Image (cartoon, rainbow, N blue to C red; front, top):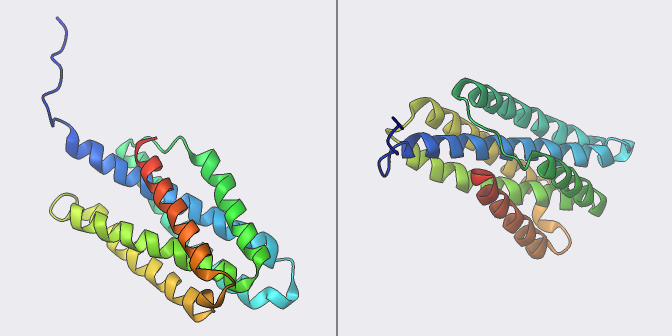
Length: 185
């Protein structure tokens, strides 16, 4: 006898939680790659050591976030995104290119990425209310840390970058697309 097909809506909660964990894991992985790309440029220049230290501190925070989502992926049996190799290259490339454009462009990149991630985490937090306390607590804590990264980037001159509105808009568009793709793939 064959098992009956699932009823409409059956398993929807688990699928949605898996999508959230998958996309957050992908996002933190991508953020680490962006900072690594920036460090590849700034880490080679003594005159950029101040910026390199700031970026290293932010990368350390993203590494902690990534370790948390690595744990959640393993504990909950969530399939990671199949896009990780693409996000590795794209993230590192975005970081390196914005760093080559200068310190302010690198900070503009951070501001744009963190702005989208903060918005994304805020939406997830609302959706997780009453659904999954552990994941909501993680999302809320990480959201606050991403806001701190964004504020640091602004303080470091992100909005003074050459062609800031265009640069920010393009990066935000790419981040939003990566979020949608990583939820499913």
